[in-house]
Image (cartoon, rainbow, N blue to C red; front, side, top):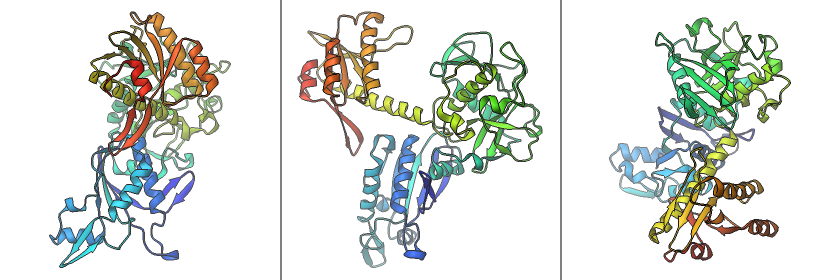
Length: 487
């Protein structure tokens, strides 16, 4: 079963493997009416591929795995390589149109001839593109087959009523270390402190004197002396003797949990019974627990590069300590615990940001390649404060300050215009360059005129796809503007 937008698709699959290397067996469709088996094979496979793409999975290969195919291999009539679906090897799924890939997989199943003794038949049944297949994948962030299957089954959504957990009384130390490594994805501001500008939150990992798992504390702002909340490892997780712990849900995924208690400090008095009301968080059910536990971060299967759930939890604690202040919290406030850990596997906003960065990287790489062919320098000058130009291109006659956007949304255009004018004053050596906003297509005419009126040139590129993934092409007008004679 695969759940998609609240609906259950009748499509079954199994997952084997561990530590990022897995085999997915997607079962065949067959039967009719009441005897139907996996009638939602096609939409189910589409959802499965889309979810794998969202976590940057690499498809190593897809093999026909039907009963006759396995028998042919076991009888020595065929080798596994003959069951490989053409065009399904070493694919970076995030770069592909997974709908087209699903159609390709179904088409290619029909092309494989399975040998059965002296007889050669075209596949197992003529025209059938819904047979059992074996997908071999690599995907980081998933340690167990159970956690990957849970994600592929339910996607980002997790029903909070299903979050029934058991405290992990062994092995929890490694999960705290993993959580610390996620925190270190923030901007290092010294002394094992990390800042997350999108949330305006800083974290400090404080090493213990006896060599045990470090403690961690969080505050609002890049610098400051006050701390909102600490999330520290327990002495003995099985005894609930600390305010934080590691728990395991019914799908064998590890979570960082914390009790809803904030000790008295300079920001507020002690907060305990009113924690739920002040933060609008909901606790999860923990088997045999005498205390109330709230989710902080999903650790097993997390594919984000930021501690999304932790940052949201800290914001809620800050709200509780300063209820009169306005905090920028996510829409999760409407839903409670299941959304606090960033949709738990991956918050939509961060997925969108990763996709923007990925596509932007393709555009830059394509621009770099055509610049190199024309022996023109393309660089990315930056400011000491961290501001970085998307591209600074300099030919024999002119220099160009380039900002790349992957949509024509108003917010992208406003941002691009502001960046181009700002960078000219911030970054040395680029002020005299011609300012260029590079877009995938032309925006509305009134927007075009407004941008041109600011002294910025509008140029365009085109996204496409081939069997290797996303492609980028520059039309003749763009090439000529930059002085590219060689396409």
